[in-house]
Length: 239
Image 1 (cartoon, rainbow, N blue to C red):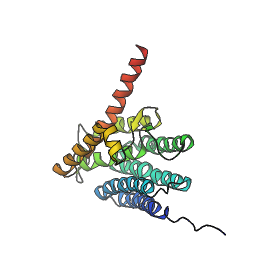
Image 2: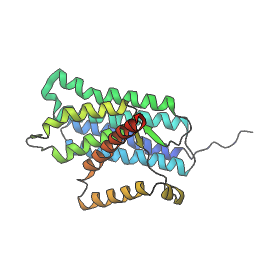
Image 3: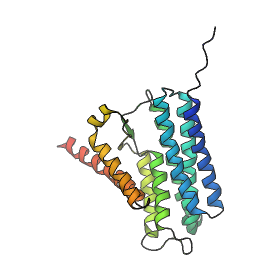
């Protein structure tokens, strides 16, 4: 007699489906020049992306199907959607070159996710190798929310930062620089990683005080911290 089918994976997969929907809807909003809504949808997709992993761990329902589905959702929400968004808000000015530059977010994100899936052992990981694609998507979306003006677009000096930001994010996704995973919300994890929890608490406070405007700077800190830590460890090994 066959055992009852485990339906606990349905719940995290529903969060992943919402991630997919937000990415798709973000692209629609971008095509309709609703860039603020498109940016927020990418950020909301990131919330669903975090929740599906959290729920999967809580319900012990992590699966290979969930991993593959999550990667497909991430490719749309944090690869294609931000790439299309940054192209329509600024990089369209460079015609074909703008298409090529914006496509780096999709191409690098695809390689990043493919590498992650082939190297995944088990479902819990101590760190990410390369910048996670949701971090790249959030960085693009939050940058637009802060610096894009619906009437005049990007102004100097912020417009000059866009191409370097896109290239840097793309490089970091395919790099081997380590980035920390979100800590588990347990007493043991709190004792093990107190600084991680302190940073999360400070980030939440900053987001509340600034009405979300601190989001871009929080991710800038995360990205730069990973780079500087990598450089520090690299020179430490040489010495």
